[in-house]
Length: 271
Image (cartoon, rainbow, N blue to C red; front, side, top):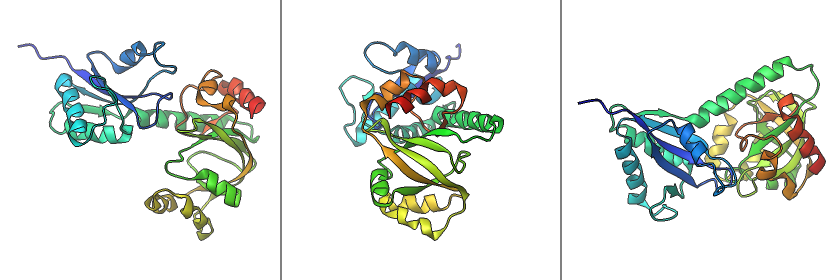
């Protein structure tokens, strides 16, 4: 008997959907091909691959994932559809549980790969710059941290520094769902800081206080000062993507890089 060719079970997200909505389906072909097929007039923005599971038993794996979700709660958005009201991170944990019972299952966390590649690109860009101050777009998730409250009370905040922020850099804060838009402009007042207890005022704005303990363990911080705020609908995700943004930001973007010239100009004109 011929060995069955492997296929894929996938988790897809979409910038135009809520952050806790995912599509979980299957395909006998590479998932990037399937996701492009789904990019049609029914959805305003393209799907993004969050994770995939490669296995010869992809039909069974998809059923197991769906059944696992529905056994514990009614999270299917519509009957007989592959859309679920579940965070992609939670769906990924279910993928990992199902993979344990499949001998050939291989999981690829595509979102991590994308973040690493973007981080490496940013480092290469930074190493080639001429020392001038940069302009950034930096994402923030209000489900984890109350950025509005922090800025309203203190006018500044400390940020974990994964990117090469420098004193004098400027930028914009992109708030994810439900805003899905740029809402603040900032200036980098200081960078390359070690943790200090003076930063502890930030604790009151964490939704989950356990996240604050994890945050303190980071080894580099930058201090941001708010320089402006906006509620302009022209700075929402759909408009940003129509002017050069490729996907909802998952890490800081160096807008000073030439690839983002159109996007940077558009933001500056509409902030």
